[in-house]
Image (cartoon, rainbow, N blue to C red; front, side):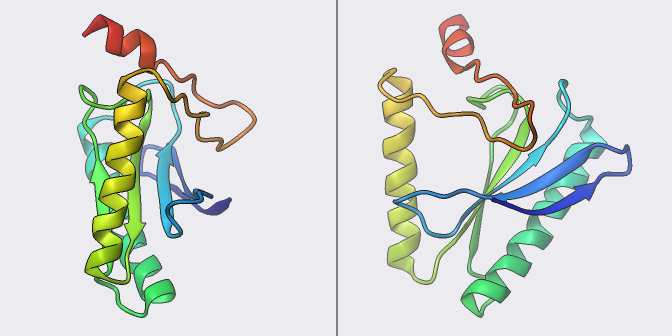
Length: 138
């Protein structure tokens, strides 16, 4: 579900999505459009935007602006093409530990080729999931 859209100085659009999942209740993706990786300046702007959104979401949904975890993977370690950041909210240390367990399990299944996610849908055109090709090339 789309929560908000923001434009970087370059005009590139970043969209905040609430990811519906059975295992993680407060899971959000800040996804940037474009077919190429963002410039360093755009990455800096996106990090600032992700931090601001994480604080805003945590304050609104958890009652504490500090109850968030940001996960950002650089281009060499990302599974998906395109620039995105994960924003996860947690109400307790246990919930934070749980989100790491869930994400570790998901990543292990993907690495073993046992799980294939759908691309994050921001618009009618979603970026292709090229994880298998990129992992095979490594």
